[in-house]
Length: 535
Ligand SMILES: *[C@@H]1O[C@H](CO)[C@@H](O)[C@H](O)[C@H]1NC(C)=O
Image 1 (cartoon, rainbow, N blue to C red):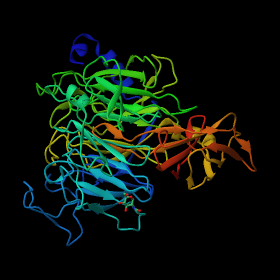
Image 2 (cartoon, helix red, strand yellow):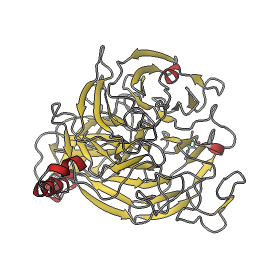
Image 3 (cartoon, helix red, strand yellow):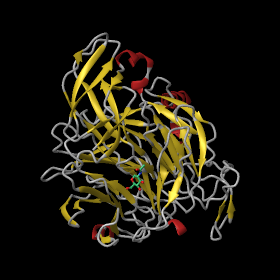
Image 4 (cartoon, protein in one colour):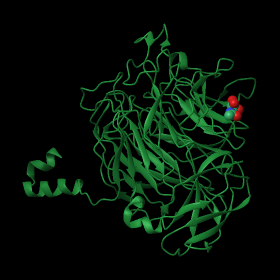
């Protein structure tokens, strides 16, 4: 920018700048909560339309107190031995009200996943949380559900910067973590042991780059695991790598190199799955503690289920680290949050990336990315993005500092916002479906009907798509997947109503058991979702 401004006439600079803040770019922003009290490092949406936000415990005073009589005593806490501040809160999406939750052990850089019965399983962290297993059984907004820390069982190995993924049988695999190049399961398998996973050792370099590995459950029941620049298809039952993919060019992508990844929507006969990995820091930025090394914007996409697949490369409109990739209900991928320079870690990034971009997987290479309306709040290290049941995307956190700091260039961020993709704009309201009838639970392979109403006559297919509720942390949504159901065309069924015949996912490899947000999608415009249990 400085080089450019040195020799461009000023009217051109004005023109250039004004194109960056054009109000007519798609998407709008809403401020939901001016002060959440905590900066969310980990965020998950529950089937009661509440959101669990979670920071770490040893961070000193937050801006939200625990209820009277609920202080936490921890003689090992370096900051507050008697801590009366909340480090987790529940947000009610109906009222935007917050309720403090009580977490006891340190959840710094931990991991999580929803279990088949809707309970959030949360594992690991730092210090006293290193081997901890916690559960949160969500409740509606009138309830008083809270974190429960298990005392009868702990992780076989400490897990700091690990990734969790729910499996076809409803158990959870916990992959990697700092100093733990192994996997383990919940409930525990193999006499409570951890199983060495040499791939994580092979992908560890001097700046780590194998932390928070990208783990995706493929529809063939194997895991796609990406660390550093490498990826494998992993049979976790036999503990064998069944396929090695070619390395992804453009440098390391996992922590601290700060890329992101998503599995594109599963559809059709569910025999294929494509993985996208986007953005990242230049190698060495972390070692040199460089705040201003430009990030790159390179994305790779691979047919993970192919026989001899290669990465197809494409560049985002701008470089980005710490971007979150959020699967939207229509199958597009929103890339949001992050920065354009530096790397992951405390005080290590600059140049916030305020404009989201939309990745449209079905467009030809070169036309897939669309720049969206920029926001105003930098969301860098320790920030999150989650799809909400009404199609908005919730943005929380950002705290590039060891403690809460409000007098910095990039302060600890307590505001919660929502980004509204263009499909929520008022000029698309007349094609927006409303779900009138949907079952609360379906069985694998089961047939069921969804009834929707739409203002304008429906032409063509109304999709019914299931979105998982993921555990978002460190620019990756653990357990994120979108499953497009096989549907019949929409048959008129009374006043502006349509009946759609749906087939539930065939098995837990396509859709692990649990609660999903079921969206009807008409011409790319999603309904408000209804939660549906799949088993
Ligand atoms: C959900 O499943 C977990 C793990 O099996 C269990 O600990 C918990 O009690 C269950 N919750 C409910 C409400 O059944």
